[in-house]
Image (cartoon, rainbow, N blue to C red; front, side):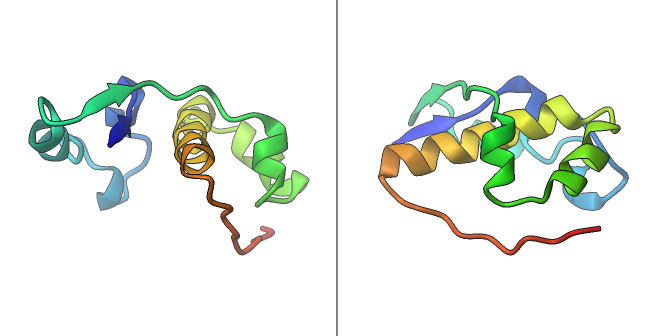
Length: 94
Protein backbone atom coordinates (compact mmCIF):
# COMPACT_ATOMS: atom_id res chain seq x y z
CA UNK A 1 0.00 0.00 0.00
CA UNK A 2 1.22 3.50 -0.78
CA UNK A 3 0.21 6.34 1.53
CA UNK A 4 -0.48 9.63 -0.21
CA UNK A 5 0.75 12.35 2.14
CA UNK A 6 2.01 15.92 2.22
CA UNK A 7 3.32 18.04 5.09
CA UNK A 8 0.54 20.57 4.48
CA UNK A 9 -1.88 17.98 5.86
CA UNK A 10 -0.52 18.84 9.32
CA UNK A 11 -1.53 22.50 9.10
CA UNK A 12 -4.40 23.77 11.23
CA UNK A 13 -6.98 25.34 8.95
CA UNK A 14 -10.00 25.80 11.22
CA UNK A 15 -11.03 25.61 14.87
CA UNK A 16 -12.89 22.37 14.25
CA UNK A 17 -11.44 19.53 16.39
CA UNK A 18 -11.00 17.45 13.25
CA UNK A 19 -8.42 20.02 12.11
CA UNK A 20 -6.69 20.40 15.48
CA UNK A 21 -2.94 20.57 15.78
CA UNK A 22 -1.42 17.12 16.31
CA UNK A 23 -4.23 15.22 14.60
CA UNK A 24 -1.91 13.67 12.00
CA UNK A 25 1.18 12.85 14.05
CA UNK A 26 0.02 9.59 15.66
CA UNK A 27 -1.34 8.24 12.39
CA UNK A 28 1.85 9.21 10.56
CA UNK A 29 4.01 7.59 13.25
CA UNK A 30 2.02 4.35 13.05
CA UNK A 31 2.38 4.14 9.26
CA UNK A 32 5.94 5.44 8.85
CA UNK A 33 8.44 2.68 8.16
CA UNK A 34 5.72 0.20 7.22
CA UNK A 35 4.41 1.75 4.01
CA UNK A 36 5.73 3.71 1.07
CA UNK A 37 4.78 7.40 1.10
CA UNK A 38 4.18 9.55 -1.95
CA UNK A 39 3.12 13.15 -2.46
CA UNK A 40 -0.09 14.03 -4.26
CA UNK A 41 -0.48 16.48 -7.08
CA UNK A 42 -2.78 19.42 -6.57
CA UNK A 43 -6.34 18.71 -7.64
CA UNK A 44 -7.47 20.63 -10.67
CA UNK A 45 -10.55 22.77 -10.84
CA UNK A 46 -11.95 20.12 -13.18
CA UNK A 47 -11.52 17.57 -10.36
CA UNK A 48 -13.38 19.87 -7.97
CA UNK A 49 -16.21 20.37 -10.45
CA UNK A 50 -16.89 16.64 -10.39
CA UNK A 51 -18.31 17.02 -6.87
CA UNK A 52 -18.85 20.74 -6.23
CA UNK A 53 -20.67 23.60 -7.91
CA UNK A 54 -18.69 26.49 -9.35
CA UNK A 55 -20.27 28.72 -6.72
CA UNK A 56 -18.93 26.56 -3.90
CA UNK A 57 -15.46 26.49 -5.47
CA UNK A 58 -15.41 30.29 -5.72
CA UNK A 59 -16.36 30.61 -2.02
CA UNK A 60 -13.59 28.22 -0.91
CA UNK A 61 -10.99 30.02 -3.08
CA UNK A 62 -11.36 33.02 -0.76
CA UNK A 63 -10.05 31.09 2.25
CA UNK A 64 -6.38 30.73 3.17
CA UNK A 65 -6.65 26.93 3.15
CA UNK A 66 -7.61 26.65 -0.54
CA UNK A 67 -4.21 25.26 -1.57
CA UNK A 68 -4.30 22.78 1.32
CA UNK A 69 -7.73 21.67 0.17
CA UNK A 70 -6.41 21.17 -3.37
CA UNK A 71 -3.59 19.04 -1.94
CA UNK A 72 -5.99 16.90 0.11
CA UNK A 73 -8.40 16.45 -2.80
CA UNK A 74 -5.45 15.69 -5.08
CA UNK A 75 -4.42 12.91 -2.71
CA UNK A 76 -7.90 11.41 -2.68
CA UNK A 77 -8.19 11.63 -6.47
CA UNK A 78 -4.79 9.99 -6.91
CA UNK A 79 -5.70 7.08 -4.62
CA UNK A 80 -8.99 6.53 -6.45
CA UNK A 81 -7.29 6.63 -9.84
CA UNK A 82 -4.66 4.12 -8.72
CA UNK A 83 -7.32 1.82 -7.34
CA UNK A 84 -9.36 2.11 -10.53
CA UNK A 85 -12.39 3.18 -8.51
CA UNK A 86 -14.94 5.83 -9.27
CA UNK A 87 -16.23 7.98 -6.43
CA UNK A 88 -19.60 9.62 -6.22
CA UNK A 89 -20.46 12.50 -3.97
CA UNK A 90 -23.32 14.66 -2.85
CA UNK A 91 -23.10 18.16 -4.27
CA UNK A 92 -23.84 20.79 -1.66
CA UNK A 93 -24.38 24.36 -2.77
CA UNK A 94 -24.00 27.12 -0.15
